[in-house]
Length: 186
Length: 218
Length: 193
Image 1 (tube, each protein chain N blue to C red):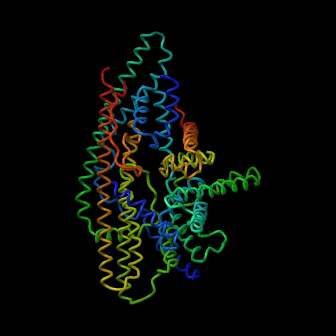
Image 2 (cartoon, each protein chain N blue to C red; image 1 turned 60 degrees about the vertical axis):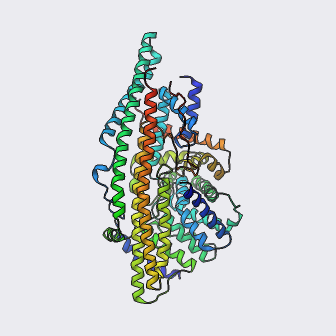
Image 3 (tube, rainbow over the protein chains, first blue to last red; image 1 turned 135 degrees about the horizontal axis):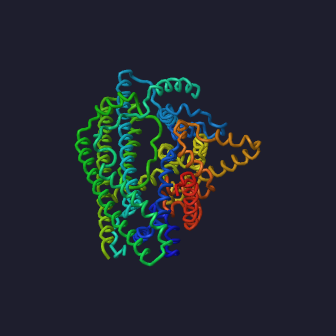
């Protein structure tokens, strides 16, 4: 394979794998890689590196951090942004942070419930529980969608097709026209 | 004010101690629909073996001692590429079939899901899930469905706040109705996500078939 | 598809305008929506859960103070990520300087102590994960930021350039170098040639 073409392809491997290339350039790279073992190796190795990155538990901050952030910010805003020493909740309180985030936000926004009729409170608590149950279900649906997507991506990478010839839904653009076959691969 | 917080933390820590690692048991997708189709997995293994061969052939090529030898090596490489293209089609066909089967499971499941079931499931799990919603893998065919589920979660959190201060039975009825609407919306996106994967796999299969055709005799 | 995508950015723009007009409920909503992403970004840039928590709070407080400076039509995400990336950079510089003052044999301990202390500890016992995190830690800040923004957060080249206030070509080049480094470091452990 021609070295200059290889250099060009290798410079674009990142963009290709992360979906930054238009269809024509994607197909050009795929055609080159189908015939060039060296570039095919580079592509496979880079994919493996990205997979390893995905498996390293870095997709999100650890449990409870985001809620602690919300609670902390709401707290500071309520106190009028007065400077404070380093915010010190230990991360062991992570499990509780979710409720406290909601509570802190509620206090800041002045929507904290005042104690009222007991019977009504019980009914309200049940409603809150129901809403939480739907949230819990929604989260399991998200997990399922994530699992299915990860499987789809893994297959895509393993069959040497990259993230896919079409990238519908990845960016806020209109529907794409399917690219023309330009006699590639010969 | 903030002096009340230590007490609240204590109670919540006690509750946290009984939470399961995952808030809900797996949502019941049948075992035979999970993971990759066995035929696809097999074909993947074959591709890996061929890829190893290709690597070896690529190293042999510059060391070929004659034009015929080099020609033979290139022919072997071409033949492997043809095989890989065919295997790719097979893998995608099987995964597409599986994705369609999952969609067929999800549709009636979504239509029959009721608020009471979801509430029962959470009771069995010991309480609400903890921690923030992770951002999840980016983009892809399920991105829109995923985003809509996250929006539903936002709206549900707002509903929780309203529910906490509901002041009349009529208001409570309205809120319950809204909560049920969100459950319905979530399940719609559940199905939509599976549909999007089927479409994406269909496109990818079409692409793979085109590639395989291009690998044909020149 | 088009209608929902049209609604989403529109809805956020309205929240931003309301927040700029001083409505705390709107800002609270933005805070809730972006806290996971911002804290994820800081964590990915620092490998430090406490830093993720503290610096993210600073990001949002700065955002609260400065939200009126956001021009209409500008990307909130790019702006928040820009603030976050700057906070992470300052933090890393401070940490590096603090480490340099330690006696040489204490430095590895300090690094281990600073690394994630959360529930992921148990999972990080896995060698491969540790190797990936180490490889990420060794990347120069700009390369790391580009890799993280483009891969974990799915920003396009243009969006990443906006968030990092650099050129699109710089983003592409940094991505290329980052992936090459990552590949080299990870392949070192599993060389089967």
